[in-house]
Image (cartoon, rainbow, N blue to C red):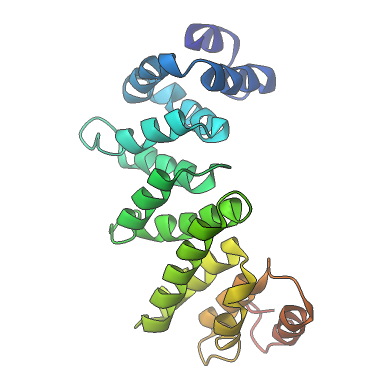
Length: 214
């Protein structure tokens, strides 16, 4: 399949890409070959990583997690794309959530991993609500103990990706923060939370004196 994809597409052709995603879903036994393509062919690597992300199968997620250990063979940019891919899969596995949790302390990929946990929580809210709430609770715990505005900004943005109403009260505390970046991120934190209270807070932030917050 990858040979056919190479022959027919430069990585942007819609039909070829859709066919590659479908092939990954239907033929998990061929993922080893895709792994070699990612490691040896930088021209196709980004497209194959995106296809693994969009297939969202447990096998594809496992391959992406395994590839993160290939530090000598995989350039940092591609490892970053893999972390993004794990962040955006539509059906994150518990192992993917665990991997992103472990990466939160990584100096290169920690911020993206934290954002990814928020996205994972959102995708899991219906299929695995217990795991989703666990992620949100851990993000809220970290927000409560954050020592810098940068950390608060990251965590508020991640909670915005999660969109869990249980985080509303905590996020509301930062809508009047003295730091412009924190207030701006609190707006991001509210963006997926439904209801009049979130709407009222967003309306107030829309009148903020800082352009970025507005």
